[in-house]
Image 1 (tube, rainbow, N blue to C red):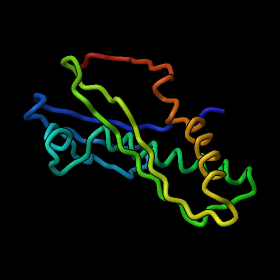
Image 2: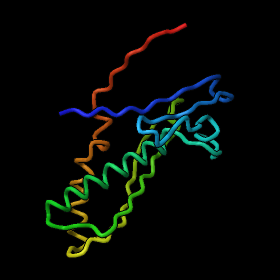
Image 3: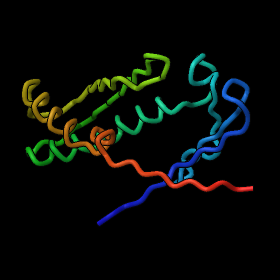
Image 4: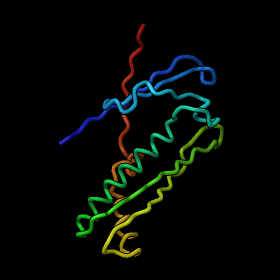
Length: 143
């Protein structure tokens, strides 16, 4: 079974003076602004790294819910943040790391058990695997 979800972006102009917008199929984001300033200068708007972080945090937390359920545990509350590191290395920007931070209230378990289950969920989360995925591209020049 396959599921397809679509995110899209538009851009006009050069890298520093250009403006873009991000949209999602669900409408959660609808032409939400992003640009150089929101990515590199902490100005209002979104950026690819925070979107990747939100996706990773959401995916991991859902995977952890599944893994906890398999261990006959149910979380009362879980909060996950994902800090995405973007570095300038050898003249190019590279995402070098993602650090997940989990705060969880899970009755009936202990720290060691949570860490073991969470490590498995991190490894199994589809977004954790994304950089190992096949990445394909289709392009079309339009007038």
